[in-house]
Image 1 (cartoon, rainbow, N blue to C red):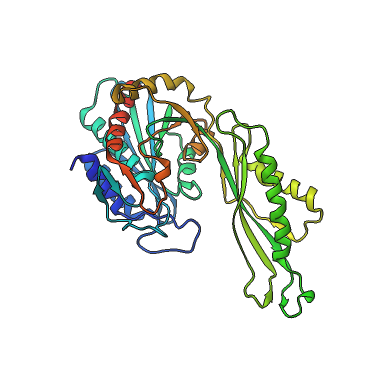
Image 2: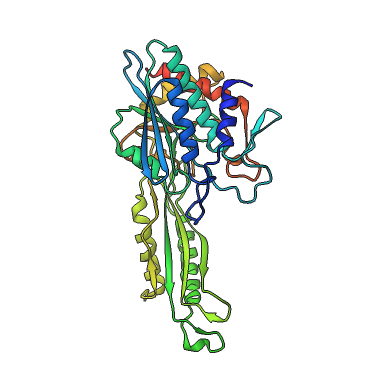
Length: 383
């Protein structure tokens, strides 16, 4: 087994599940065990390592390679966490090699990219190629839910000239993506016995009107002026809960809203615009409450990374034999907070996003090996 495959298997075998806001705990949740492994890996490599606390039990790992005489510093970023394992049809943490693929939770999103970056980073440290860029290797937490790790990383002054964020892009360069803002809407009512519903005020009925209006608003967004690459903004109601029992008129109901924003929009404006639409359609909203957003992630805009694209494409083509396509994607990444802080960013890595979060998640090992060579060549080219 080659070094990058062995490392990927080690990473997949260590659970680092993000609870995604649910009250889940135990040794399989959060990134602590993986952070311990990574810290030991970096220390064995003999590089400077910082363990940056983001929240209790959740630490970014930041390692540095200083290249002699380098003109630029690159930030390599890969997140430690994975989505939960609900509904998986394979053992999520027993990596399996089959038909040139490695199966397991996080293999595609994004431990394949992390293994490729780490292997390239280790090669830079050991070979010290003349004229290469210096590299900061960041392994961040909480990418899958609230991006607190990349936001904390973005707050620091690391002196990087360009960030390359690992995500499954099929080895294409992503220079733009949508952002997102997520918040809850709550309706209030008056509880009473369901045999006399007229004595109460049904919060679910109120929410039904709210959701109907939000569906209308989502339709308007889909017809609004699109980004030429990413398409229009969007809104989706993704979760609903309320009440306590069938025989009690509910006095509360809540929905979770996901609003995707395109370049030119501000994520923070999303809730206010939705609220204005509801007021226009429904009038009195005294029983409707918009809670503060629990995610506000900016879109990635392409302008800052544009000067680096020719060198990036050249380095990747030397390894892969073809000039990579530059694309936009509808999902968000750690590049959003990093880019908002003023750092030029691109997203690039092995794997197919269609395999991420799936019941039998896997990644093509040939892509992981290629990606490792490409990350190394990028560091050499951009030095």
